[in-house]
Image (cartoon, rainbow, N blue to C red; front, side):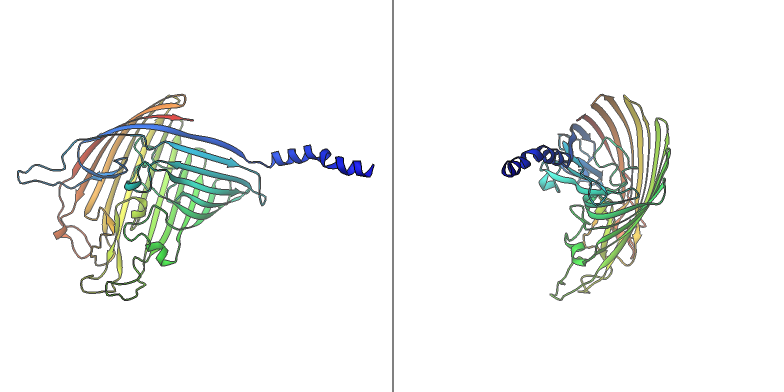
Length: 407
């Protein structure tokens, strides 16, 4: 009898073991979208990913006959924004709800990698009742998912609004039903500052960010502040070891107001070397590199402001985005090292109305982007790179049509 009992015990408990194993499995869902785009431009511009990520028009470039070499029409069709997303939920761990997200697209991490699969998001999140711990690759805290311009064109209003995803660890604490604070440490991934790619790693210091959020049914507001360090080189041109490091800060405040079907978003950004956010600005040498071998560095200070007004219904979205950005000045004497984006730009602005027609899982969008750039005359720049003479605005008109199916 004992032998029979020992033989049948595993069989008796097998269903319970299987049920327990089954309940321990995470809930996994697949979602995403496929998207087609067609766009044309009226003027040569700074862009990447075959024109998918659009920034601003180039400077006027006249030939011997006085014709502008950059005054050309451009046309393209793309499907790079096909985006698969896998989300897993559970089982709970350490008393927290566990979520994991894996998402990619086909924009690659540079123009050379266009049409190659890249990681957009890859993180795990532990959510407790009044706090959360996130670790992995996702939006930089300067990109606030609750308040960004939902433009038809890729990039969410870049270069007036930030665009950055990066590896990080962040901790969020709820201070009440409407208020939360967050602290994060980050190391830049493929969204790096213009210049030497290992500059942040060379510093040995993480990008540190703090964020405050306030949220009610109709009002959202947030404030973000952060600081990063870069060590562009470890050896000088004279083969001397150097550890010259430059720090730079970033500040942003935004708000979103909801009035039924109408939403209004507004954000102001100010900071130093904002190029890791795909914005204009950068940094250079504070001493003449032709004279001083182990020179120090200085930042370009940049500001930006944007707003987005939208009407949304089940079948229709009508909206308009507007943005303005300017390189204010350098923090010290400035000598160019090429570690900047739009270094000679005094200011840029954009106005872009859009219409999106929706039916079930499919939407068609049309947007017109009128973007203008005013370049400074380099010879007129003072020691802190403030221009006393500027060219007239060069302008590009981009018309974009998109078709998207969400699943």
